[in-house]
Image 1 (cartoon, rainbow, N blue to C red):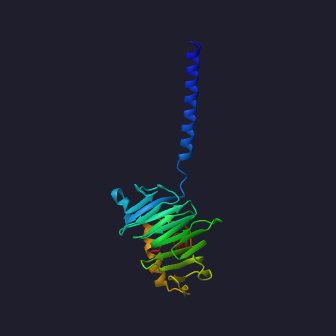
Image 2: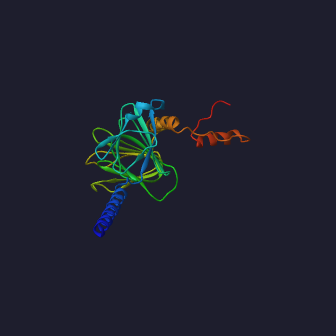
Image 3: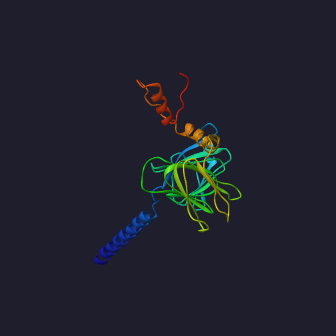
Length: 249
């Protein structure tokens, strides 16, 4: 009888140990918190839905996962847009990244590696943490600005700054870092110094950022501010500040 009681006690002890080990294992294998979030998927002039969401392909640990609006994105995730689909990714509430069609990036937080395609980076609020876009030859770092990075199939990198400043650096220290200011651009080819454009024309800006404005208008509709009691000039100023355009009066 005593032996039987001891055996049951030993079995309970073993069971408790196994449960503790299982609990620890579950805790250590829990997924880390997301670094970013897939905010929107756009196809043409509308939000994508259903099977169209798979026009943004997400790969994690070499395995594809189903794309869903609002899904968390982890460090190391690869995001690829197809020839008909664009995407908006939020990094917390501080940075917004808009991906054009045929774009391939990997999330490194708070950095992305851009293999090919076009991306617009916009800072949404003032924080200390910098955001960087890395490419094969060039890193572009930002503190407070909106800028565009494109990488073509010949690995030519173009950086265009709309507002603020961006610092570009050679990944191989082939040339000294340079600062690109508002409405300026730089083009970098392998083994060559950056080619600078000091003042872009409005048409150049429209070509670079126009597609992203369309995506924002579809994915993130701007709220119309209250214009009651304002002068015409002030009303127009507030509309422009909200990303809208005044119509006829």
